[in-house]
Amino acid sequence: MRSKLSRRGFLGCACCAPLAAGLILGAAALMPAHAAGKRTDLTADQALQLLKDGNRKFIADIPDQTATTQGLDPRLNHERRLEIAQGQTPFAVLVSCSDSRVPPELLFGRGLGELFIVRNAGNTVDTAALGSIEYAVAELGVPLVLVMGHQRCGAVDAALSVVEKNATFPGSIGHMLEPIIPAALQAKSAAPPNADRDTVVDLSVRENVKRVVTRLRAASEPILLEPLKSGKLKVAGARYSLDDGSVDFFMES
Image (cartoon, rainbow, N blue to C red; front, side):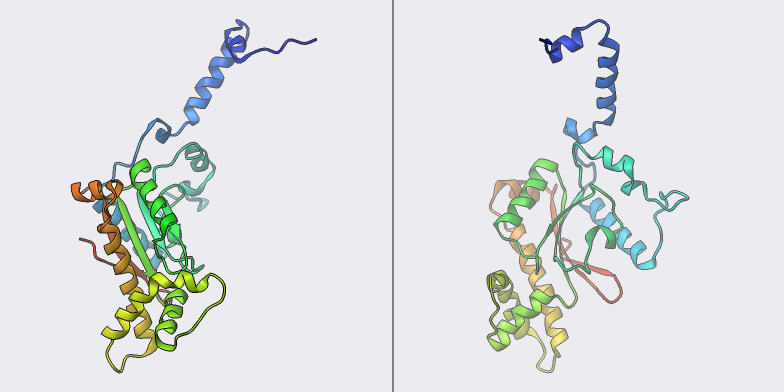
């Protein structure tokens, strides 16, 4: 019967020692800094500025200067995947809509491992979303939470239909819309009498974002409350334009 060589035996074997040392050093070289507890060094304002700069390049179709002559962004290549395989150091949480036309990494010009994305229809924050945000702040050290709605949001439009027409929706869709209805009510009452539907929907989109931002800022949980009070965490709002690709930032302070 063959005897099995234990890990300790393998490492202690004189003939295998050089190979073992090489394997250990190789693994250490591939281990990302986050595995040792590293977090982003960016402040909330610096993180916000990176998003703004990235969106400006996205609008102008300006390629990232770090791209190679083959047009491959190093933040998306094989080496980057290996770098973040064992850990992550995102610099912002993006609470955004699931809409396929609103891909956060692309419209902010960011790469792998840079944004911690929380997405659902209507960019609302339920228990699962809040837990995800708290995890990113407490465990990953993210300094910025950006809540972003977008032009002609279907979920917000549906919530407005509930307000205006008492519309009903099948399955769990109706329950999903419930957190957005107060925003639709507020926007509807604040809209000018002659406002068209697109205007009211857009007002509702912004009001929905404002309500989520306000809720997160007023969090009673120490996980968010303490970094918010100390200035280590910022929660801001934004609205993405489907027409021109621009992001309008608001509630920055």
